[in-house]
Amino acid sequence: MKKSVKILALAMVAVMLCLTLVACGKKISGTYEAQIGGDVLGYTATYKFSGSKVEATKTTSVLGSKNSVTLEGKYEIKDDEITFTFETSDDDIKSGTFAFAETEDGIKIGLVEYKKK
Image (cartoon, rainbow, N blue to C red; front, side):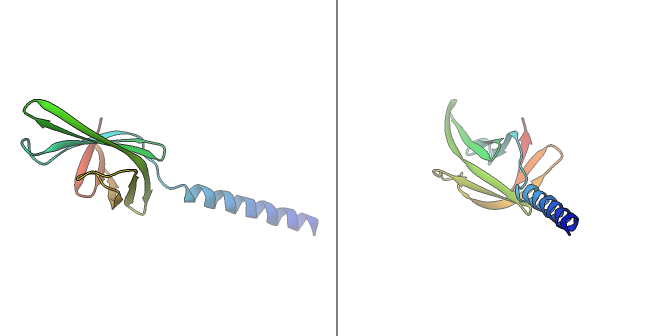
């Protein structure tokens, strides 16, 4: 009886460990960049992932002058979707859930492919 209880307890611990690892979700790391829009009205979007944190930067260039906006937040990848939660928002960088895929050269968020830097 004691032996079967020990085996059952060990099996339960193994199952709990597996479920804990699955619940962690997928994480990515590194910096990814894409040119959004055209040369005149476009901007460069950069995402820097570290752990569960993300730093999103939008850099515009007008007549040789560069302006940048950086937002910090968290992200979670689940079921081919990425959810961003930023502390503040911008016209182009917002919290929300978007389609996500890893590509040969980087990642794809929504319809935009970001190349790894």
